[in-house]
Length: 387
Ligand code: NZQ
Ligand code: ZN
Image 1 (tube, protein in one colour):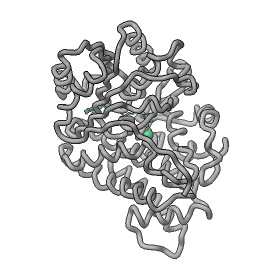
Image 2 (cartoon, protein in one colour; image 1 turned 30 degrees about the vertical axis):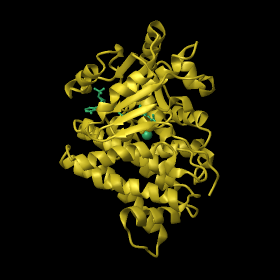
Image 3 (cartoon, protein in one colour; image 1 turned 180 degrees about the vertical axis):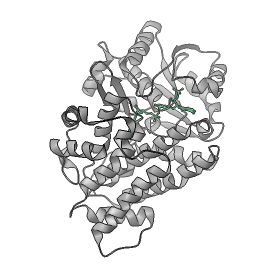
Image 4 (tube, protein in one colour; image 1 turned 60 degrees about the vertical axis):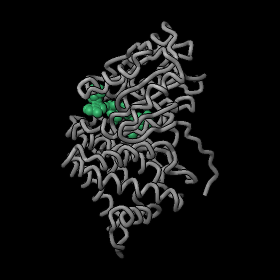
């Protein structure tokens, strides 16, 4: 087991009615608030009105209409408002895109130059305004981690910015706010949570504790996502999805493990940069192809272990057959919750494969640390296999 230092400074209020804590948490920081949200989902659900009523003694400015795959323009808009009005804290109400946009605003507000410079080079982050989040979609883990992913349509780039200053100060996680999440987004969220785990679990050097956490989260999603397809208001399933989302991406699942270079995310961010697809759907399509590509003498036992622990498979003499069966079960699970299993279904062809592979490699130095090391031609081939 390798050394690690671990700290998640985010305070979590989890469960029904925890929005009651919002007012006190906000005014403990300040009364000049920038409220960041997406399209109309929080207005339809009544959450927008509820938040404003609870903060009636605060001065609220807004950034509305944050897009899925949030754009740098929305970040710039928020940064300008923070600087102009002396905003004391940012309140993000929505899914991962809203939270990510808010995080970049928090960092941009404490930076003299253009916020995109921070995305290109995290070392320029000098600090950030405090962030409070109210989550409405279980997927990214942004509510409990220090990352944000921002898109720039001018340069066709979608890149992560990570910094300790970007952990939310407080996150309010009420599973009831996810009751209205549509089935496509439930499936995409499930795939995103599972992918966060695969990135940390399909590795060669793990330990029993990290394996146990990862396997529990994978089994939880495989149990809960189909239940939500049947009954979107199943509170326990929504609650478990929500907590799984938060745990899956903040590093706790792989403490003490060896290299975990997150190749699937690096490759998917290229797809959503160019084609503006839903992140979790892109991940679900790439995952089985990455797994099959990674299957070799070094990894075969890892995939068999995964099949036993997550799909309760019996040991088989033919280890490759068993490993392939585990990968096929993964693909079948994604299909069962309505995700297509190839990129063509999203109208993606081979036109940008070279460009995506080169950019993914240039911005993600870890590909050669994958369980089967990946180089430029390997990345291109995985994209082709997924078409
Ligand atoms: O904009 P609104 O109207 O709110 O609608 C959203 C959006 O259309 C809707 N939605 C959200 N909550 C809802 C709801 N609809 C009904 N009821 C609700 N309660 O869902 C749609 C998608 O929302 P979005 O925030 O884009 O989804 P998600 O949470 O999956 O976030 C995806 C983004 O997060 C990034 C992804 O790359 C992508 O840009 N990621 C962020 C990470 C992080 N910060 O750590 C890690 C992830 O790996 C990921 O890369
Ligand atoms: Zn993700």
